[in-house]
Image 1 (cartoon, helix red, strand yellow):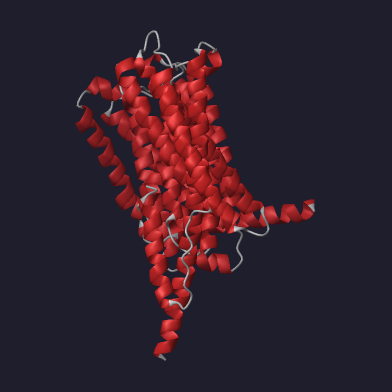
Image 2: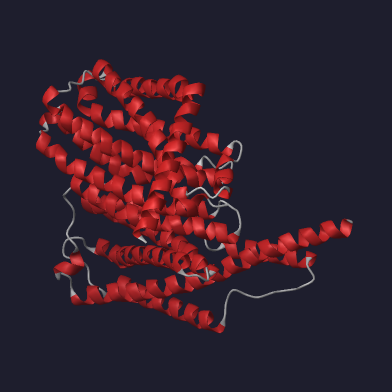
Length: 259
Length: 236
């Protein structure tokens, strides 16, 4: 999802700049994101060491518990990403200046959030099969998460509808705010429908110290990865928008040159 | 200030009435809902019976099937509702004329709710005939309240997302993806409340009232959101 987009965008950029007189070869990385990227890699190496080697087996789940070090941080990050999308969308709508950077932040965060939510759902199913004996249960949290996933896929589809940048921004900002309204309603209706659900392990304080620390390492590593991905996606989105604008200008210039 | 706000509300309400009457008049003359959507809904009810192939089971799940058929038909109704707006750029013309989008939203929702209500009565009849559903007379109040709240909620959500999809021409395929997750609470709430009204699975009316509360809350939330946000969605 994130690997193909940057190359496609730079291809378009070079095509457009061939037509337009200005040449522009800005990378999407800066010194800050380069350093951050190295830290993210180090963080994941640390997570592998703690998650796979240092942390103990669970008394009942054995090694299966290790999937938690990916599952829980990605779930938290997905929720954080969707909160950021909501806040950035509100900021775009409320600000008189209508800054498109808020819109790009909302879009980038939603994309990354969907990625993390997909990881959450897949790892959860893989864990559920040997532990609960089934890939899926109609538990309220699982069902809400699945709805959240579909809702933000729809949000991204709305972003792809076309139109001017501000049109896209306004439309998708309203969509994101509607999703903020929708999620609690879905959550409570599903919860009423199926009241039984798994207790939260972290709040219950039953967790081993080294396990908790590994989970913390995972959370830090995933948060940094989130920041890194969002920054890059925002820059790609900015370039994408500029390519759109420039492509239009180039087409107009070509039309005028035809006389 | 309050006088100004009141006159704005009165103006929006006037627009809403005009738009609703216009939509219903278009339907009265074209008969698209009557000739196409109602038969579609009936066929869906028959297809459910084919799929489940068990009369006892059908009676037990009838409330859910009725609402599933309603939600499927809603997709078609919404597309029809906005096809008549985008065909001649009518929605853009209303915008240019400075008509309040909140009023347009309420008007289109009202017309959609009226069409849905007719459809729901037909589906209820189909459930009684095809699925052997009983409607105890003492529980008609709960049933009517459930239908009212659920219909309002569905109409508001339908108009909201229909307006969004109408803004992007040729992307009607997006509508079901956007709308189905949002109406999930209505499906759950309306099904449980209707089970209580039918007495399916020994549900009592007491089981139904909290769900009715959820439906009313849903309608209120999306009614407000639509009135406020519709302008941003359809703006070109």
